[in-house]
Length: 268
Image (cartoon, rainbow, N blue to C red; front, side, top):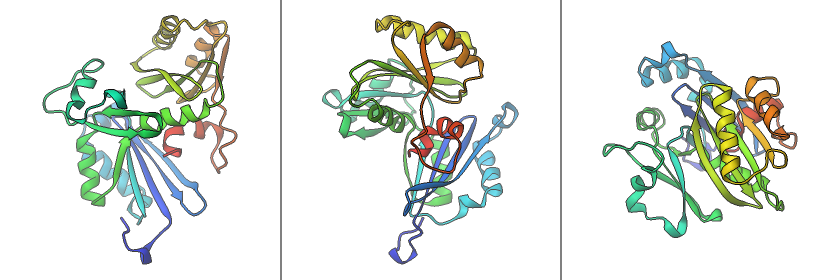
């Protein structure tokens, strides 16, 4: 990673990692624009191998990952996280916050991202083996959790709106439900799923618990979802006001589908 001002590249690299693959984006920091976007998926056979070997193969095939950058950020994408209000937060007890919604072990490493603008912290378990790979490759970098980007971005979108709105971000194996009202986080949770029926069950159950009427509340979806797939269609069947997140205002060279699918990475 570049440190000398004379070597400044005006480029930033963001890599989003998950158990089923990784995606990366190169940013031109002068123009504040993403200029390269790649997504590499590991199939079930590949995932049986070592992470180090899988990542090494990716690095051998993508020369952009070997360039010099002024800034490198690694984004951990999993459902091992929870938000804690600043008033209730104690850095000495990170594991205790997670034990209510995920299985934790004494050997787990815990981290947190401070979100002072929203008076909360995101506590999570990063992929240590992946971080170790990047340490060997880059030496130093910043890392954060995917939801530390997703939730603040959605909070910003919700400003000046007094209605309660539900957002759903769909990944390959889990999805997040975020309910907001005028830059206030009312609800956040992550759910594992396999079928569209799993998906709509958790959406409707959450709506019921929050007394959101499916005939009235607005649902916006983003991530790995499109208007033609089964997940969107089943949401459309049971919820009157469902739509894909509008990303038309994000000015870059990528498609709306790419901006919606890689919303987190492109806002890192």
